[in-house]
Image 1 (cartoon, rainbow, N blue to C red):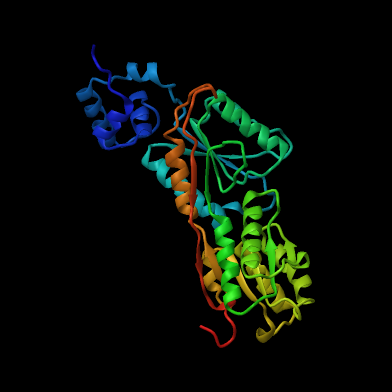
Image 2 (cartoon, rainbow, N blue to C red):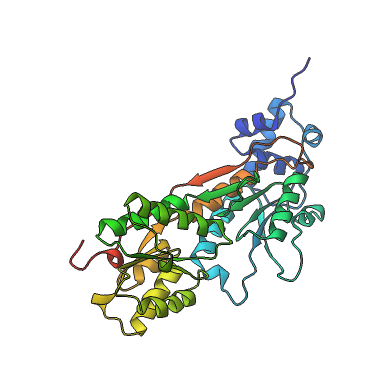
Length: 349
């Protein structure tokens, strides 16, 4: 009996990914000539041909990796550190694999139909950003899973659904921020969170609660505030927090934009430096080092999240059926606290 080489063996011999083998042998999308030569040489050596590929795997035809973007009216998505870093990571890996990115923005007035993108052969795989817990979103993702299309979520998880997900450990990240504030001697710590429809907001709240519980400090619901991740919502929170500075010593914010808005809002309200609460942001965006004082923040490896999600999703076969057993993508990267002046007691480090 003659053994038939696998796509994996061709990839290993050629020193490329399985997705690249598929694209070369199916002649899909732009590829470097050197890459084509390596794959074809490996395929010839192993006796692996495009026809065997066609029998074993569904053909990919578009050459596009779809990126589903959230509908946020009047928001400059590409200027936001979160989106720009993730997209840079996705784009870098996609380019290595010879894929183009197709940006797809949700329409707020129409039902989500991710599977339609595959049926119309607009994309070969898709990555979903900004997903949140809504009935329409959940139904669309369940359909993707059921039909067996290659997809992956970034920075959002749905408990018990078994979706492909790449995320950061936001429980640990927020726990690090609050522990740092406690170590500075602050005990009355407020939390400015994002909307609860996002799993990362719920995870950060859990981290905040865990840090207080470990320190033996009862949680105070009146110290919990909610914004929408924008700088303006941080400025709005400043109006409320400024009136309570006699009991609020520090604030942990769920992203840098809200933290910077809070700083700005408090200054505009005339709060002097000596009365400013200690503040820790989240994301460690480029702007964190430019604020006065420089903003302590939890660093999230957004670029790596994008890179990993693109690499993993392009390795998934288009099975055409959710009955096909696949290894579920479940990646969680650690976060890291970066300490700067905004969270230190006057006269501290």
